[in-house]
Amino acid sequence: MKRIPWGVLLTLLAGFALGLVYAWTINPLQVYDSEPVALRADFKDDYRSAIAASYAATGNLPRALARLSLLGNSTSTSTETLNSQAQRLIAAGEFAEADQLAALALALENGTVPESLPSPISTLKNNPPLQASAAATFPPTPEDIPFQFTETPQATDTELAATQPVTDNPTPRPTRTLIPTVGAPFALVSQDPICDTNLPDGLLQVLVFSSSRRQVAGARIIITWDNGEEQFFTGLKPELGNGYADYSMSPDLIYTVRLAAGSDIASGLAAPTCQTPAGESFQGGIKLTFQQP
Image (cartoon, rainbow, N blue to C red; front, side, top):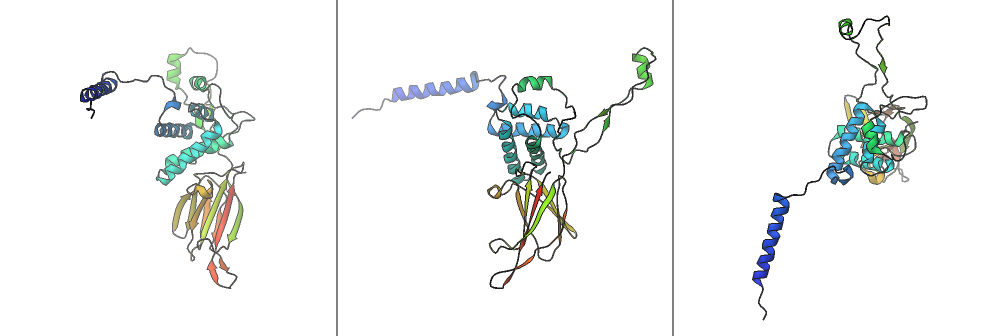
C-alpha cells in the first residue's frame, strides 16, 4: 500500500497560500486607464444610469451616444439594453431612474443619429455643444425638465467699466439659449371593446408605439376616476410586448387614461357588458393603442 506524500502536499498548500497572500495583499493587480467596456455588469448599469441622468439634464444626445459607444455596443443594442434596464428598475420601484433610461432609449430610437460613432473618445474630449439647424431633429425630453428659454446673465455697468475700455459700441442684449423641444405627443389611434371569456373581467389593455411602430417600454400611464388616480407602466410583461401594460377596471367606475409623456386623453372608459354564445353576461375589457406621429 502506497503512503500519502504528506510532505509534498503540505509544501504545495503552503506555496499556494503564500501566492495568494502575495497577489492579494503584497502586490495586488492594479488596473489603470481601463475602458468602460471592461466594467462588471452591475457597474455598466450604473454607467448607463449616469449617462441617462446627464441626458435628462442637458438634452445632449450626441454626447450620450459617444459615452454609450464606449461600452462597445451599437445604437440599436444600446436601445434594447436601456429598455431592459428600465424594466428591471420599474419592477424594483425605481421609477425616476427608469423614466430617464426609457427617455434616452426613446431618443436613440427616434433621433436622427448614426448607428455607431467612429471615435467616441475624441468626441467626448471635444464636447461639441448641441446646436439647432434647419434639418435638426431633437429627441423627446423627459417631462420633468421644464421647456423654457434661459437668458445669459448680463454684466452690470460697474463691472463693465472696471474691466473694459469705454467704446461707442452699444451694450449687447441678453442672448437666448435654445432648449430642445419636446417630441410630438402620442395619439390615441384606436379604442376597442374586447369580449373574450379567456381574459380577466374588466381588463384594460394599453399598447404604446413609437413613430417607427416599435413598442415603447417604460412608458408611464396615468389612469384617473372620481377621487382616485393610479399609475402603471409598459414593459412589465415582456412576454406580451415591451409596449404592453394592463389594468383591472372596477365595474362601477368611469376611467380616464393618458400618457405622462403627453398624449390624447381617452375618457369615459367603462368595462362593457358582453354575452357568451349561450347568452350569459360577463364583463368585457377595453384595448387602447397610442402611437407617436
